[in-house]
Amino acid sequence: MSITLMALAMAAAASPDTVVGRWKTETRNGIVEITHCGQSLCGKLLSSDGITANPALKDVKNKDEKLRGRALKGVQLLGGFTLKNGVWDGGTIYNAEDGKTYDARITPVDANTLKLRGCVFVPLCKNQTWTRVR
Image (cartoon, rainbow, N blue to C red):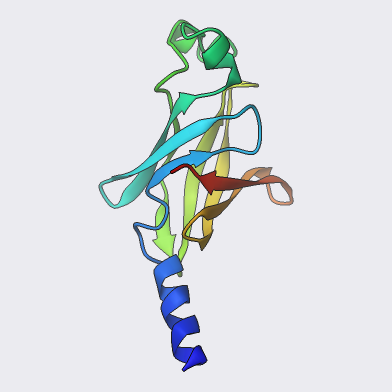
């Protein structure tokens, strides 16, 4: 019986919808909303310490000068992911702190926890744990 429950729990973790929702990042109290974009995922920034302090905060460190005047609130941070064996891989994450975009992977740990990995190139990667916002 416990093996069956474990198998069901693992299947639920691998569900494409497990990652959909609002997530709190490890740093700066970021809140990111992840949704489906066709067969992929998108994630947009809803809030952060910086946005709370200044709702008109701009994307001033963006490498593309034309985008530096856009508001950070609502910026798409995540995109381009493909679900493979329960992991959303092959995507990218935009880091507004340095204006760069990194290769990324999202691994659902359980219904309320994601592991997000961003890499300049392997093995130069950083990992974060995001928790679901209810």
